[in-house]
Image (spheres, helix red, strand yellow):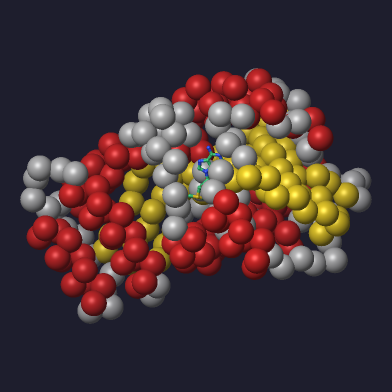
Length: 262
Ligand SMILES: C[S@@+](CC[C@H](N)C(=O)[O-])C[C@H]1O[C@@H](n2cnc3c(N)ncnc32)[C@H](O)[C@@H]1O
């Protein structure tokens, strides 16, 4: 399994929070207008970013189940968990959501959700997931990378790097099968549109002053470049220099997916 660094996940959290599409929340609150309490399962919880975002915005009392294969991230989240009077119950499950998906009793949940999770999954997961969730009231997957990012100022190698990055996104991310990468939004919409009203909304990162975040993202690009035979060091040098001079901006295109049972 590819382990996600907890520092990176925490660094992402403030950027993700600003990027997510608020219309999704309005639709969910409207859907459960008559409910007092709802039950939610979060897939690939990591350090809890999805919970931290949704908890104050959902109007209802909430029961949450958190699932992640990484004990390290789950423990980090447990230690930093902040409850509120809206949260009735929480449960942590150290669990493989790919291999053991059919062990989850999805019927028990009003909302099945995840964030920054869909793109690392294999194609066959989507069919399996849909079959288990064709009756689920709300399915929400936020922050699905859609295959494009741009740094400013521009550089002649920008497009080449995006192509390399996307190619890498479709490799096996330590799960024993190729990840779907930027195809994830289309795959999830195609799966749910028969039985649900589906929505795909933009949730772009637009990072201007957070240079630590930009540096971290450049580090991922460096790793991808290292696996390639072409020398892109001029691009990296240029990018790190822009950051050093506080003249760098990163826009990365994500989508938020919502399905509401018809
Ligand atoms: C990019 S992180 C996103 C974490 C969090 N949802 C967020 O928005 O910050 C992906 C998460 O999926 C988890 N993950 C990867 N493979 C998994 C699997 N097979 N079963 C459960 N969780 C998995 C990772 O451990 C990681 O915490």
